[in-house]
Image 1: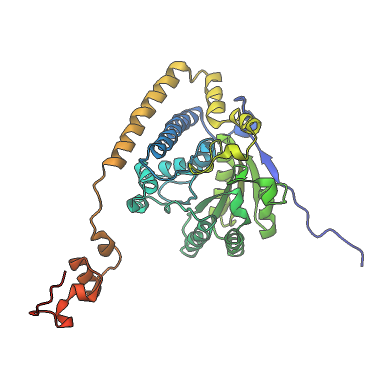
Image 2: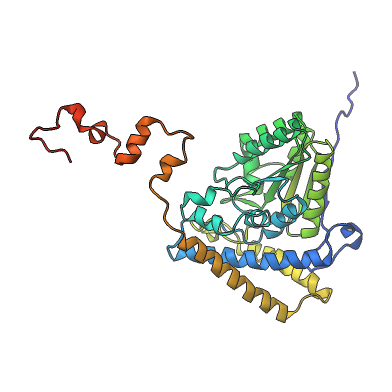
Length: 375
């Protein structure tokens, strides 16, 4: 029998706003208005300042290890802006602070999380997101399940999950992709390809030319976009969401971006990254290009930048104050928020603050009334 081609595919790349602030008006049609870009840019300035202050909190011993979001704000904001707040569900990794804030998470919750305060993971009622996920790749399975639930309930809602390029080498990624694809669940997989899986470059930890092409194996639409371009990220996400709501199943979006800072405050990227590579990506910074765009439209200048930065300092100062001034949790919280009805033995532990049976009830050892003292 003669050979024949049974499958062919291609991965498209989308960029609408380049690093110099030049906009492709045809591709930008029906995406973001200038007013929306202005608002998103101002938020980007605020969240970048929060990121820098969080770094200083860690360095001054006021917070634990922290992974900066610096340089990846557009990927988070463009996707989150396309989603419907209060309807769609965000399932993050740990570099999507801006997306979570846009969907209602109080910013001080992120600081509490990295300060080791569990209350930073107690998502407020009505905020549709999961807590940050530190284990690489595990959150994608949750997103697939959430999306499947929406399909079963026939609700026009979607789940959006975020992860890095390194996470696509994890088994959980492939299980989530296959599950969502087979069940045609309304799940949007958003890869923030920041070029590095901690100290391992993308080209070393995978052999595929793009991350997006991994979607092809699961019969899933996939696209690669300029992750530092709000217009491109928004357009690709909105199209994926519209398709999912119409019953078209999951999609994969690879946002090509860069981690401008270290992997976390426990890392020193100077030991494995070429300074010239970092310098080249600094020029592609989403804040720089969107400022250039706004300036070209006459919507931004140095005075407005100074005002935005001053406003950001005020907002961030209040966020830090809120996180650091929160009252200490009660010791009994570990009991009161574990069971709907607390078992008798745990009630005894809570009331005595002792786990030993002897400490809780000395009588069982026949010590009451004896000359032996029990501490």
